[in-house]
Image 1 (cartoon, one colour):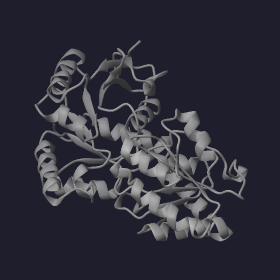
Image 2 (cartoon, rainbow, N blue to C red; image 1 turned 180 degrees about the horizontal axis):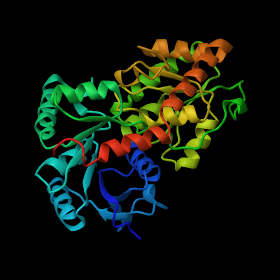
Image 3 (tube, helix red, strand yellow; image 1 turned 135 degrees about the vertical axis):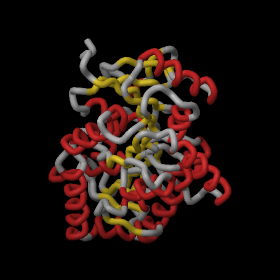
Image 4 (cartoon, rainbow, N blue to C red; image 1 turned 120 degrees about the vertical axis):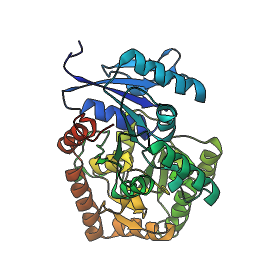
Length: 352
């Protein structure tokens, strides 16, 4: 039964795979009790997608098509009368803010498209212009890193930003247990959607550089996505697991010796937190989203491969990586998320 005194939060989520719906589920599962959550997301075969299974919230179908989704957001808000609408990612931000609705909008980009270094300057300018226009219809922004907050303030200097600490989506496992595979065959893993944002080409370059130093190493990509990009990974000798449910992701990470994060840009990656929760040392590509993370990072594929080799061969470097994991997890936990969500949805905050 819904508490009549609770504030209803409608989450608009345009995808059913990858990190964004997992993050939304984490918010709902770890939310303060004064909020009741509703989800507007695409259905599969007339039912909520598997990512929402077991979650005791009211679901509504976002449908398909740009104009239909914009209309669906409006009619759903009129029907449900939520106190706050929380739009997750750029497309949901468009559906929710393309026309004015009767509830204040929280927008959480989960990374801005105009931050993509692979996108042409002209397209980046167009995306930035669209975000600047839509920012006028945004009550608050949820940001995942200090870099993302800087991007918001470049769009709207007076914007109200609330820093949101992501949580791991898998249960914690002590690093003392060690990897489930033999150290004689190190397993290097990356988790995420196979898409340009996650930069599988960079991961392939890391694999090539590391194999020159550690010939027996095995690489895997935990996830799925673009068929052509997946084919490139497999042709480079990298195993692709396909999409796995959370227990499968946890098992695949637990069998890893080192986690490599190859993305070109991010909001803040859940997969990094999942690797840390599983006690797997991390070697990351140096990107703006990770600048405050404390993780071991390098600018190019050769540098990341060098970090992996150091973690494999030097106990001191491995200890540094694991210490960075602990520090990161201490900052991103259920308590800090509770506080952030209260601030994000506080209707006594700035004017709409």
